[in-house]
Length: 474
Image 1: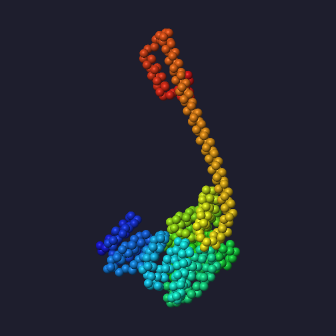
Image 2: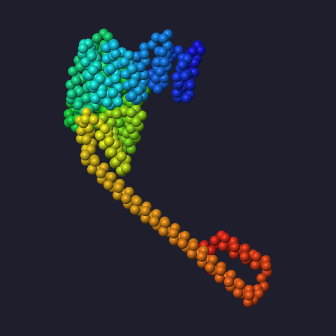
Image 3: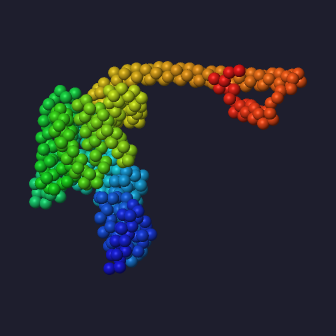
């Protein structure tokens, strides 16, 4: 009971302070640590990893039997969710070291390592590890792993614009998945099957875009396979599969020009993905919601979603070639709003991204250049830059002229003050001289009281520089 109360107090402390420490977990039982990890595994990976680290520390106690490789594996997953690539790779490398003598387990974890590289856009590295896994699976006649790896390589090909090759790969393996799913124990293959259906649908959508929307058959095929994916994800209660299928449905409707239906699908997908606590999956949702407003001419709302996409990219450290489209869309939206400065900024970001992408993504880049007529738009950006430079030059001239004018007026005013003061002092000297002369010629009958008052007044007049006032006469 005391142990339970302590665990609850740790959780309460986390809720109050937004964090939990290893010191707080040091006395928590192993079972409570496992339970804590399961509680936060999907909802808060930052906290979940602290429970795992506490479990890892317990493995040093020989009385506690814990699978170190499993803990490192889950830590890799948590860092993967937190978009910390180096930490994720560090822990998966620990797992590979611990399982190097068990070929089947080693291959499974090697597959995960390829997946980490894939998620962070390092496609060459991902293919390198996928190929190693495929060779091990082939030697062991592991047909399921071969099929899964083939699908993942197909996904990479879609990312780099090789959609025809990708379609050939994934469709070749679809009958195999259909056979597996038809077995009495077929439900355990549901994720692989649904993923293959969604991949085929996504590839057909990309082929439709690649042909500049000249082949309606591609879009019909995309709709066909995605409908099956939606039905199967409902049947097998695959929440993530259902959310991604809905997202894909929204993309297909966008390409069909059914903007209202597309937005409805994307809103539903967004809600499901948020409930699953998978923010990185929202990138494409936000991008396409922005694109829906863009094609409708509502550039203000389009930019609000493009900005949400950009923020999420920074938060999740995502890096997908297709997201380069975001920057050209933002540049064009700002240009439509006559915001030259931001239009130029995001067009330059588009080109920076262009330079960062390696040769693997060249076909994908070519598609973007055609779709948004980037070459012609560059002429527009160049014109905007020239106009902005001319405006800045004109503004600088006007500002410089105004500063010179203010400076001239200030100098003139100061000079006038000095001249007035000098003139006043000269008049005082002359009055003093006349007073002395009159005093010697004729004695004036002025009371001492009036003399004192007049002298005090003159002193105050000079002290307060009343002679500088415009209405002051001789």
